[in-house]
Amino acid sequence: MRIRSFSIFLSVPIFILCGSALAAATTAGTPAIIPEAGPHSVGLRIVQQYDYSRVMEAQVDAFGKTVSAESARPIQIMIWYPAKRTNAAPMQVADYRHAALSDVDFALPAAEAAKQRAGWMAGPQKVQYGASTLAVRGAAPADGSFPVVIYAPSFASSAFENLDLCEYLASQGYVVMASRSLGARAPMMTDDIEGIEAQAADIAFLANYAQTLPQADITKVAAAGFSWGGMANVFAAARSSRIKALVSLDGSIRYHPKIWGAAPYVRPARTAVPMLFLGARSPTAEAMERSDKLGASYLNSMKYSDVYVTTMPPMTHSDFSSWQLRFAPDNAFGDYQRADVLQAYRSGALYAHKFLDAYLKSDAKALAFMKASPARNGIGPQVMSMESAPAKFVPVGEADFLRAYSKAGFKDAQKLYTDMAASSPDFKVSPINLNTWGYQQLRGKNARAAVEMFKLATHIEPKYGNAYDSEGEAYEALGETALAIAAYEKAVAVDKGQTNAIARLKDLRSGGSK
Image 1 (tube, one colour):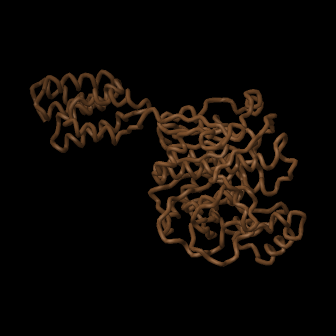
Image 2: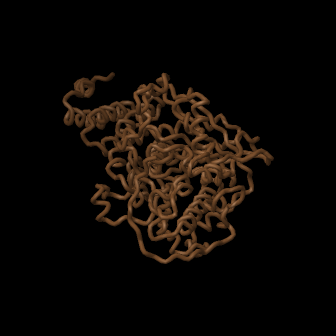
Protein backbone atom coordinates (compact mmCIF):
# COMPACT_ATOMS: atom_id res chain seq x y z
CA MET A 1 0.00 0.00 0.00
CA ARG A 2 1.36 3.38 -0.96
CA ILE A 3 0.34 6.12 1.44
CA ARG A 4 1.64 9.66 1.24
CA SER A 5 2.60 10.84 4.69
CA PHE A 6 4.38 13.69 6.42
CA SER A 7 6.94 12.66 9.05
CA ILE A 8 6.37 15.53 11.43
CA PHE A 9 6.05 14.94 15.14
CA LEU A 10 4.96 17.22 17.96
CA SER A 11 5.98 16.75 21.57
CA VAL A 12 2.67 17.31 23.35
CA PRO A 13 1.46 15.45 26.45
CA ILE A 14 -1.83 13.62 25.95
CA PHE A 15 -4.75 13.00 28.22
CA ILE A 16 -7.91 11.26 27.17
CA LEU A 17 -11.46 12.44 27.71
CA CYS A 18 -13.98 9.72 26.94
CA GLY A 19 -17.71 10.07 26.77
CA SER A 20 -19.99 7.08 26.39
CA ALA A 21 -20.09 7.56 22.62
CA LEU A 22 -16.33 7.05 22.49
CA ALA A 23 -16.35 3.81 24.44
CA ALA A 24 -14.04 1.54 22.47
CA ALA A 25 -15.48 -1.40 20.56
CA THR A 26 -13.43 -4.31 21.83
CA THR A 27 -15.87 -7.19 21.54
CA ALA A 28 -15.39 -10.18 19.26
CA GLY A 29 -11.67 -9.56 18.99
CA THR A 30 -12.02 -6.08 17.52
CA PRO A 31 -9.28 -3.77 18.81
CA ALA A 32 -10.17 -0.37 20.23
CA ILE A 33 -10.20 1.39 16.86
CA ILE A 34 -13.78 2.60 16.57
CA PRO A 35 -16.27 4.13 19.01
CA GLU A 36 -19.10 2.09 20.44
CA ALA A 37 -20.94 0.44 17.56
CA GLY A 38 -24.43 1.57 16.62
CA PRO A 39 -27.75 -0.24 16.98
CA HIS A 40 -27.49 -2.23 13.75
CA SER A 41 -25.69 -5.46 13.03
CA VAL A 42 -23.43 -5.18 9.98
CA GLY A 43 -23.50 -7.21 6.81
CA LEU A 44 -21.01 -7.30 3.94
CA ARG A 45 -21.54 -8.08 0.28
CA ILE A 46 -18.82 -8.15 -2.36
CA VAL A 47 -19.95 -7.54 -5.93
CA GLN A 48 -17.76 -7.78 -9.01
CA GLN A 49 -18.70 -5.44 -11.87
CA TYR A 50 -17.12 -4.20 -15.08
CA ASP A 51 -17.41 -0.66 -16.36
CA TYR A 52 -17.52 -1.33 -20.09
CA SER A 53 -17.48 2.38 -20.91
CA ARG A 54 -13.81 2.47 -19.92
CA VAL A 55 -10.98 0.26 -21.17
CA MET A 56 -8.04 -0.97 -19.10
CA GLU A 57 -4.69 -1.91 -20.57
CA ALA A 58 -3.68 -5.54 -20.39
CA GLN A 59 -2.87 -6.25 -16.75
CA VAL A 60 0.53 -7.78 -16.19
CA ASP A 61 2.10 -8.83 -12.89
CA ALA A 62 5.70 -8.18 -11.81
CA PHE A 63 6.82 -11.32 -13.65
CA GLY A 64 5.30 -10.27 -16.97
CA LYS A 65 2.31 -12.61 -16.69
CA THR A 66 -1.05 -11.39 -17.97
CA VAL A 67 -3.44 -11.67 -15.06
CA SER A 68 -6.70 -10.82 -16.80
CA ALA A 69 -7.84 -10.90 -20.40
CA GLU A 70 -10.84 -8.60 -19.83
CA SER A 71 -10.25 -5.13 -21.25
CA ALA A 72 -13.08 -3.39 -19.38
CA ARG A 73 -12.48 -1.63 -16.06
CA PRO A 74 -12.88 -4.08 -13.15
CA ILE A 75 -14.68 -2.64 -10.14
CA GLN A 76 -15.06 -4.92 -7.14
CA ILE A 77 -17.48 -3.26 -4.73
CA MET A 78 -17.50 -3.85 -1.00
CA ILE A 79 -20.90 -3.00 0.47
CA TRP A 80 -21.38 -2.71 4.21
CA TYR A 81 -24.99 -2.39 5.32
CA PRO A 82 -27.31 -2.52 8.34
CA ALA A 83 -28.21 -6.19 8.82
CA LYS A 84 -30.54 -8.38 10.79
CA ARG A 85 -29.21 -10.14 13.85
CA THR A 86 -27.53 -13.46 13.12
CA ASN A 87 -25.54 -16.11 14.92
CA ALA A 88 -23.21 -16.53 11.95
CA ALA A 89 -19.50 -16.01 12.53
CA PRO A 90 -18.23 -12.48 11.82
CA MET A 91 -15.57 -11.63 9.27
CA GLN A 92 -11.92 -11.94 10.14
CA VAL A 93 -9.42 -9.31 9.07
CA ALA A 94 -7.85 -11.92 6.79
CA ASP A 95 -11.15 -12.23 4.91
CA TYR A 96 -10.80 -8.67 3.69
CA ARG A 97 -7.32 -9.15 2.31
CA HIS A 98 -8.39 -12.49 0.84
CA ALA A 99 -11.22 -10.75 -1.04
CA ALA A 100 -8.81 -8.09 -2.33
CA LEU A 101 -6.73 -10.73 -4.10
CA SER A 102 -9.43 -10.76 -6.78
CA ASP A 103 -10.30 -7.07 -6.84
CA VAL A 104 -8.73 -6.71 -10.32
CA ASP A 105 -8.36 -10.28 -11.55
CA PHE A 106 -11.84 -11.71 -11.08
CA ALA A 107 -10.64 -15.07 -12.40
CA LEU A 108 -7.94 -15.64 -9.78
CA PRO A 109 -7.89 -19.40 -8.97
CA ALA A 110 -9.35 -20.18 -5.55
CA ALA A 111 -6.41 -22.46 -4.77
CA GLU A 112 -3.95 -19.59 -5.28
CA ALA A 113 -5.95 -17.31 -2.98
CA ALA A 114 -6.21 -20.02 -0.32
CA LYS A 115 -2.46 -20.60 -0.45
CA GLN A 116 -1.75 -16.94 0.18
CA ARG A 117 -4.25 -16.78 3.02
CA ALA A 118 -2.67 -19.80 4.70
CA GLY A 119 0.64 -17.95 4.63
CA TRP A 120 -0.82 -14.91 6.44
CA MET A 121 -2.53 -17.05 9.06
CA ALA A 122 0.70 -18.87 9.83
CA GLY A 123 2.91 -15.78 9.71
CA PRO A 124 4.13 -13.33 12.35
CA GLN A 125 0.92 -11.23 12.10
CA LYS A 126 -1.49 -14.15 12.47
CA VAL A 127 -3.10 -12.52 15.53
CA GLN A 128 -3.96 -9.40 13.55
CA TYR A 129 -5.26 -11.43 10.61
CA GLY A 130 -7.30 -13.69 12.87
CA ALA A 131 -9.09 -10.83 14.65
CA SER A 132 -12.85 -10.64 14.23
CA THR A 133 -14.60 -7.58 12.86
CA LEU A 134 -18.20 -6.36 13.08
CA ALA A 135 -19.39 -7.52 9.67
CA VAL A 136 -21.00 -10.83 8.77
CA ARG A 137 -20.59 -11.85 5.12
CA GLY A 138 -23.94 -12.15 3.39
CA ALA A 139 -26.09 -11.33 6.42
CA ALA A 140 -29.75 -10.58 5.67
CA PRO A 141 -30.30 -6.81 5.21
CA ALA A 142 -32.24 -4.98 7.89
CA ASP A 143 -35.59 -3.53 6.96
CA GLY A 144 -35.67 0.13 6.04
CA SER A 145 -34.00 2.68 3.81
CA PHE A 146 -30.62 4.16 4.70
CA PRO A 147 -28.38 6.99 3.45
CA VAL A 148 -25.40 6.03 1.31
CA VAL A 149 -21.72 6.76 1.97
CA ILE A 150 -19.28 6.10 -0.87
CA TYR A 151 -15.74 5.69 0.44
CA ALA A 152 -12.76 6.45 -1.83
CA PRO A 153 -9.46 4.87 -0.73
CA SER A 154 -6.06 6.52 -0.73
CA PHE A 155 -3.53 6.35 -3.57
CA ALA A 156 -3.63 2.87 -5.19
CA SER A 157 -5.11 1.36 -2.02
CA SER A 158 -7.65 -1.35 -1.41
CA ALA A 159 -11.31 -0.83 -0.66
CA PHE A 160 -10.91 -2.20 2.87
CA GLU A 161 -8.16 0.18 4.06
CA ASN A 162 -10.70 1.73 6.47
CA LEU A 163 -12.79 -1.36 7.08
CA ASP A 164 -13.38 -0.36 10.72
CA LEU A 165 -14.79 3.06 9.83
CA CYS A 166 -16.96 1.54 7.08
CA GLU A 167 -18.31 -1.12 9.44
CA TYR A 168 -18.91 1.47 12.16
CA LEU A 169 -20.92 3.73 9.86
CA ALA A 170 -22.99 0.74 8.70
CA SER A 171 -23.76 -0.04 12.34
CA GLN A 172 -25.03 3.54 12.66
CA GLY A 173 -27.50 3.14 9.82
CA TYR A 174 -25.61 3.78 6.57
CA VAL A 175 -25.04 1.77 3.41
CA VAL A 176 -21.30 2.14 2.80
CA MET A 177 -19.66 1.30 -0.53
CA ALA A 178 -16.02 1.22 -1.62
CA SER A 179 -13.86 -0.02 -4.46
CA ARG A 180 -10.12 -0.18 -5.02
CA SER A 181 -8.21 2.93 -6.12
CA LEU A 182 -7.26 2.23 -9.74
CA GLY A 183 -5.50 4.32 -12.35
CA ALA A 184 -7.18 5.56 -15.51
CA ARG A 185 -5.74 2.90 -17.82
CA ALA A 186 -3.94 0.43 -15.56
CA PRO A 187 -4.36 -0.85 -12.00
CA MET A 188 -1.69 1.49 -10.62
CA MET A 189 -2.93 4.96 -9.80
CA THR A 190 -1.12 7.98 -11.27
CA ASP A 191 -0.56 11.19 -9.34
CA ASP A 192 -2.08 13.51 -11.91
CA ILE A 193 -5.45 14.87 -12.93
CA GLU A 194 -6.17 11.85 -15.13
CA GLY A 195 -5.73 9.56 -12.14
CA ILE A 196 -7.90 11.62 -9.83
CA GLU A 197 -10.65 11.92 -12.43
CA ALA A 198 -10.59 8.14 -12.90
CA GLN A 199 -11.28 7.65 -9.20
CA ALA A 200 -13.99 10.31 -9.27
CA ALA A 201 -15.62 8.37 -12.11
CA ASP A 202 -15.47 5.23 -9.94
CA ILE A 203 -17.36 7.10 -7.22
CA ALA A 204 -20.01 7.94 -9.82
CA PHE A 205 -20.11 4.28 -10.87
CA LEU A 206 -20.76 3.23 -7.27
CA ALA A 207 -23.46 5.87 -6.87
CA ASN A 208 -25.14 4.49 -9.98
CA TYR A 209 -24.88 0.93 -8.63
CA ALA A 210 -26.43 2.08 -5.34
CA GLN A 211 -29.70 2.57 -7.21
CA THR A 212 -29.98 -1.24 -7.45
CA LEU A 213 -29.80 -1.68 -3.66
CA PRO A 214 -33.24 -1.84 -2.00
CA GLN A 215 -31.81 -0.43 1.25
CA ALA A 216 -30.10 2.57 -0.34
CA ASP A 217 -31.72 5.99 -0.14
CA ILE A 218 -30.06 7.60 -3.15
CA THR A 219 -31.50 11.00 -2.29
CA LYS A 220 -29.02 11.06 0.60
CA VAL A 221 -25.50 10.34 -0.64
CA ALA A 222 -22.18 11.39 0.87
CA ALA A 223 -18.69 10.82 -0.52
CA ALA A 224 -15.87 10.13 1.94
CA GLY A 225 -12.22 9.60 1.16
CA PHE A 226 -8.76 9.29 2.64
CA SER A 227 -5.72 11.05 1.17
CA TRP A 228 -5.98 10.78 -2.64
CA GLY A 229 -9.57 9.65 -2.20
CA GLY A 230 -10.11 12.84 -0.19
CA MET A 231 -9.58 14.81 -3.39
CA ALA A 232 -11.36 12.40 -5.73
CA ASN A 233 -14.54 12.85 -3.69
CA VAL A 234 -14.41 16.62 -4.24
CA PHE A 235 -14.00 16.06 -7.99
CA ALA A 236 -16.97 13.69 -7.88
CA ALA A 237 -19.10 16.27 -6.04
CA ALA A 238 -18.17 18.91 -8.61
CA ARG A 239 -19.51 16.61 -11.32
CA SER A 240 -22.72 15.51 -9.62
CA SER A 241 -25.25 17.29 -7.45
CA ARG A 242 -26.32 13.89 -6.12
CA ILE A 243 -23.51 14.08 -3.52
CA LYS A 244 -24.89 16.01 -0.54
CA ALA A 245 -21.95 15.91 1.89
CA LEU A 246 -18.17 15.35 1.89
CA VAL A 247 -15.95 13.71 4.50
CA SER A 248 -12.21 14.01 3.99
CA LEU A 249 -9.67 12.03 6.01
CA ASP A 250 -6.58 14.22 5.66
CA GLY A 251 -7.53 14.53 2.02
CA SER A 252 -5.25 15.55 -0.80
CA ILE A 253 -7.57 18.43 -1.61
CA ARG A 254 -5.49 20.25 1.03
CA TYR A 255 -2.11 19.20 -0.32
CA HIS A 256 -2.41 19.29 -4.13
CA PRO A 257 -3.62 22.73 -5.26
CA LYS A 258 -1.93 22.31 -8.64
CA ILE A 259 -4.05 19.28 -9.44
CA TRP A 260 -7.46 20.60 -8.45
CA GLY A 261 -6.49 23.98 -9.86
CA ALA A 262 -6.03 22.37 -13.28
CA ALA A 263 -9.68 21.28 -13.33
CA PRO A 264 -11.78 24.38 -14.08
CA TYR A 265 -14.99 22.66 -12.99
CA VAL A 266 -13.68 21.94 -9.48
CA ARG A 267 -14.72 25.17 -7.83
CA PRO A 268 -16.60 26.07 -4.63
CA ALA A 269 -19.88 26.90 -6.37
CA ARG A 270 -19.85 23.38 -7.87
CA THR A 271 -19.16 21.75 -4.48
CA ALA A 272 -21.68 23.69 -2.40
CA VAL A 273 -22.19 20.90 0.12
CA PRO A 274 -21.06 20.63 3.75
CA MET A 275 -17.58 19.23 4.34
CA LEU A 276 -15.88 17.64 7.33
CA PHE A 277 -12.08 17.64 6.97
CA LEU A 278 -10.37 15.41 9.54
CA GLY A 279 -6.76 16.51 9.52
CA ALA A 280 -3.46 15.20 10.81
CA ARG A 281 -1.17 17.54 12.69
CA SER A 282 -0.39 20.14 10.09
CA PRO A 283 2.91 20.14 8.21
CA THR A 284 4.96 23.30 8.36
CA ALA A 285 5.02 25.72 5.45
CA GLU A 286 8.64 24.73 4.93
CA ALA A 287 7.70 21.07 4.56
CA MET A 288 4.89 21.97 2.19
CA GLU A 289 7.26 24.04 0.07
CA ARG A 290 9.79 21.21 -0.12
CA SER A 291 7.10 18.89 -1.45
CA ASP A 292 5.79 21.57 -3.85
CA LYS A 293 2.36 21.62 -2.19
CA LEU A 294 1.99 25.25 -1.24
CA GLY A 295 -0.82 27.08 -2.94
CA ALA A 296 -4.41 28.20 -2.63
CA SER A 297 -6.57 26.52 0.00
CA TYR A 298 -9.67 24.88 -1.41
CA LEU A 299 -11.12 24.63 2.10
CA ASN A 300 -10.82 28.38 2.64
CA SER A 301 -12.55 29.02 -0.67
CA MET A 302 -15.67 26.96 0.15
CA LYS A 303 -17.85 29.98 0.86
CA TYR A 304 -21.03 28.19 -0.20
CA SER A 305 -20.59 25.35 2.30
CA ASP A 306 -20.57 24.65 6.01
CA VAL A 307 -16.96 23.56 6.56
CA TYR A 308 -15.47 21.85 9.63
CA VAL A 309 -11.71 21.40 9.80
CA THR A 310 -10.22 19.36 12.63
CA THR A 311 -6.62 18.89 13.66
CA MET A 312 -5.58 15.78 15.58
CA PRO A 313 -2.07 16.21 17.01
CA PRO A 314 -1.41 12.51 17.69
CA MET A 315 -2.03 11.52 14.07
CA THR A 316 0.20 11.55 11.03
CA HIS A 317 -1.20 11.09 7.56
CA SER A 318 -0.94 7.29 7.45
CA ASP A 319 -2.76 6.92 10.78
CA PHE A 320 -6.07 7.69 9.04
CA SER A 321 -6.09 4.11 7.70
CA SER A 322 -7.46 1.63 10.23
CA TRP A 323 -5.57 -1.13 8.40
CA GLN A 324 -2.36 0.77 9.15
CA LEU A 325 -3.37 1.04 12.81
CA ARG A 326 -4.09 -2.67 13.03
CA PHE A 327 -0.74 -3.74 11.62
CA ALA A 328 1.67 -0.95 12.66
CA PRO A 329 4.18 -1.86 15.39
CA ASP A 330 3.97 -0.01 18.69
CA ASN A 331 7.06 2.05 17.84
CA ALA A 332 5.46 3.45 14.68
CA PHE A 333 3.82 6.44 16.37
CA GLY A 334 6.80 8.64 17.16
CA ASP A 335 6.42 10.60 20.37
CA TYR A 336 2.91 9.25 20.89
CA GLN A 337 1.61 5.94 22.15
CA ARG A 338 -0.68 3.66 20.17
CA ALA A 339 -3.47 4.44 22.64
CA ASP A 340 -3.15 8.17 21.88
CA VAL A 341 -3.50 7.62 18.15
CA LEU A 342 -6.39 5.19 18.58
CA GLN A 343 -8.21 7.73 20.73
CA ALA A 344 -7.77 10.35 18.01
CA TYR A 345 -8.96 7.92 15.31
CA ARG A 346 -12.05 7.07 17.37
CA SER A 347 -12.74 10.77 17.80
CA GLY A 348 -12.54 11.27 14.04
CA ALA A 349 -14.90 8.32 13.44
CA LEU A 350 -17.36 9.77 15.94
CA TYR A 351 -17.25 13.16 14.21
CA ALA A 352 -17.78 11.53 10.82
CA HIS A 353 -20.84 9.76 12.20
CA LYS A 354 -22.29 12.91 13.80
CA PHE A 355 -21.56 15.00 10.71
CA LEU A 356 -23.37 12.52 8.46
CA ASP A 357 -26.28 12.30 10.88
CA ALA A 358 -26.52 16.10 10.89
CA TYR A 359 -26.43 16.62 7.14
CA LEU A 360 -27.86 13.41 5.65
CA LYS A 361 -30.37 12.50 8.36
CA SER A 362 -31.20 16.10 9.41
CA ASP A 363 -30.55 15.16 13.05
CA ALA A 364 -30.76 18.35 15.16
CA LYS A 365 -28.81 16.86 18.07
CA ALA A 366 -26.01 15.79 15.74
CA LEU A 367 -25.89 19.29 14.23
CA ALA A 368 -25.63 20.79 17.73
CA PHE A 369 -22.75 18.36 18.39
CA MET A 370 -21.00 19.62 15.25
CA LYS A 371 -21.51 23.26 16.21
CA ALA A 372 -19.90 22.71 19.62
CA SER A 373 -16.13 22.48 20.09
CA PRO A 374 -14.57 19.04 20.58
CA ALA A 375 -13.73 20.06 24.15
CA ARG A 376 -17.42 20.72 24.78
CA ASN A 377 -18.08 17.23 23.44
CA GLY A 378 -15.61 15.64 25.85
CA ILE A 379 -12.58 15.48 23.54
CA GLY A 380 -9.61 17.50 24.75
CA PRO A 381 -7.53 19.73 22.47
CA GLN A 382 -4.60 17.35 22.87
CA VAL A 383 -6.70 14.85 20.91
CA MET A 384 -8.65 17.10 18.56
CA SER A 385 -9.31 20.77 17.87
CA MET A 386 -11.66 22.17 15.27
CA GLU A 387 -12.31 25.31 13.26
CA SER A 388 -15.63 25.77 11.51
CA ALA A 389 -17.11 28.27 9.11
CA PRO A 390 -20.75 28.44 8.02
CA ALA A 391 -21.72 28.98 4.41
CA LYS A 392 -21.56 32.68 3.51
CA PHE A 393 -23.45 32.56 0.23
CA VAL A 394 -26.08 30.47 -1.51
CA PRO A 395 -25.02 29.42 -5.01
CA VAL A 396 -27.37 30.46 -7.80
CA GLY A 397 -27.26 29.47 -11.41
CA GLU A 398 -28.97 30.01 -14.71
CA ALA A 399 -32.04 28.01 -13.71
CA ASP A 400 -32.46 30.25 -10.65
CA PHE A 401 -32.20 33.30 -12.89
CA LEU A 402 -34.89 31.99 -15.25
CA ARG A 403 -37.25 31.21 -12.37
CA ALA A 404 -36.69 34.65 -10.85
CA TYR A 405 -37.15 36.36 -14.24
CA SER A 406 -40.44 34.57 -14.75
CA LYS A 407 -41.60 35.47 -11.24
CA ALA A 408 -40.73 39.13 -11.92
CA GLY A 409 -43.03 39.14 -14.94
CA PHE A 410 -40.17 39.04 -17.45
CA LYS A 411 -39.05 42.55 -16.54
CA ASP A 412 -35.79 44.21 -15.44
CA ALA A 413 -33.48 41.36 -16.49
CA GLN A 414 -30.34 43.47 -16.05
CA LYS A 415 -31.25 44.55 -12.52
CA LEU A 416 -32.11 40.97 -11.61
CA TYR A 417 -28.76 39.80 -12.99
CA THR A 418 -26.87 42.51 -11.05
CA ASP A 419 -28.63 41.68 -7.79
CA MET A 420 -28.02 37.95 -8.14
CA ALA A 421 -24.35 38.50 -8.98
CA ALA A 422 -23.97 40.62 -5.85
CA SER A 423 -25.53 37.92 -3.66
CA SER A 424 -23.57 35.03 -5.17
CA PRO A 425 -20.01 35.88 -6.29
CA ASP A 426 -19.67 33.00 -8.77
CA PHE A 427 -23.02 33.58 -10.46
CA LYS A 428 -22.77 33.71 -14.24
CA VAL A 429 -25.17 33.63 -17.16
CA SER A 430 -23.99 32.68 -20.64
CA PRO A 431 -24.73 35.33 -23.30
CA ILE A 432 -25.17 32.51 -25.82
CA ASN A 433 -27.82 30.92 -23.60
CA LEU A 434 -29.51 34.29 -23.15
CA ASN A 435 -29.71 34.62 -26.93
CA THR A 436 -31.24 31.14 -27.18
CA TRP A 437 -33.78 31.82 -24.41
CA GLY A 438 -34.62 35.15 -26.04
CA TYR A 439 -35.52 33.38 -29.28
CA GLN A 440 -37.69 30.96 -27.31
CA GLN A 441 -39.51 33.96 -25.84
CA LEU A 442 -39.81 35.49 -29.30
CA ARG A 443 -41.32 32.30 -30.72
CA GLY A 444 -43.61 32.23 -27.68
CA LYS A 445 -45.03 35.63 -28.67
CA ASN A 446 -43.34 37.43 -25.79
CA ALA A 447 -41.11 39.83 -27.74
CA ARG A 448 -40.77 42.27 -24.83
CA ALA A 449 -39.25 39.57 -22.64
CA ALA A 450 -37.01 38.59 -25.54
CA VAL A 451 -35.69 42.16 -25.82
CA GLU A 452 -34.72 42.03 -22.14
CA MET A 453 -32.83 38.78 -22.71
CA PHE A 454 -30.96 40.11 -25.74
CA LYS A 455 -30.08 43.36 -23.97
CA LEU A 456 -28.68 41.43 -21.01
CA ALA A 457 -26.60 39.31 -23.38
CA THR A 458 -24.96 42.41 -24.87
CA HIS A 459 -24.62 43.98 -21.42
CA ILE A 460 -22.51 40.96 -20.40
CA GLU A 461 -20.71 40.70 -23.76
CA PRO A 462 -20.76 44.11 -25.52
CA LYS A 463 -19.22 42.74 -28.72
CA TYR A 464 -21.76 39.95 -29.15
CA GLY A 465 -23.08 41.00 -32.55
CA ASN A 466 -25.57 38.14 -32.89
CA ALA A 467 -27.47 39.27 -29.77
CA TYR A 468 -27.76 42.83 -31.18
CA ASP A 469 -29.15 41.30 -34.38
CA SER A 470 -31.61 39.26 -32.30
CA GLU A 471 -32.62 42.39 -30.42
CA GLY A 472 -33.39 44.05 -33.75
CA GLU A 473 -35.69 41.18 -34.71
CA ALA A 474 -37.52 41.45 -31.39
CA TYR A 475 -38.06 45.17 -31.84
CA GLU A 476 -39.38 44.53 -35.33
CA ALA A 477 -41.87 42.06 -33.85
CA LEU A 478 -42.99 44.84 -31.50
CA GLY A 479 -43.33 47.28 -34.41
CA GLU A 480 -40.62 49.58 -33.00
CA THR A 481 -38.70 50.25 -36.21
CA ALA A 482 -36.38 52.98 -34.92
CA LEU A 483 -35.17 50.78 -32.08
CA ALA A 484 -34.79 47.86 -34.46
CA ILE A 485 -32.59 49.94 -36.77
CA ALA A 486 -30.46 51.07 -33.80
CA ALA A 487 -29.97 47.44 -32.69
CA TYR A 488 -29.03 46.28 -36.21
CA GLU A 489 -26.55 49.15 -36.50
CA LYS A 490 -24.86 48.00 -33.29
CA ALA A 491 -24.72 44.44 -34.61
CA VAL A 492 -22.90 45.54 -37.75
CA ALA A 493 -20.63 47.91 -35.82
CA VAL A 494 -19.24 45.11 -33.64
CA ASP A 495 -19.39 42.33 -36.25
CA LYS A 496 -19.20 43.07 -39.97
CA GLY A 497 -20.31 39.51 -40.66
CA GLN A 498 -23.86 40.04 -39.41
CA THR A 499 -25.48 39.58 -42.84
CA ASN A 500 -29.04 39.47 -41.53
CA ALA A 501 -28.58 42.82 -39.77
CA ILE A 502 -27.13 44.32 -42.97
CA ALA A 503 -30.08 43.09 -45.01
CA ARG A 504 -32.66 44.27 -42.48
CA LEU A 505 -31.05 47.73 -42.27
CA LYS A 506 -31.32 48.08 -46.06
CA ASP A 507 -35.00 47.11 -46.05
CA LEU A 508 -35.99 49.20 -43.04
CA ARG A 509 -34.18 52.30 -44.24
CA SER A 510 -35.92 52.02 -47.60
CA GLY A 511 -39.26 51.70 -45.86
CA GLY A 512 -39.60 48.01 -46.57
CA SER A 513 -40.52 45.19 -44.20
CA LYS A 514 -40.14 41.42 -43.91
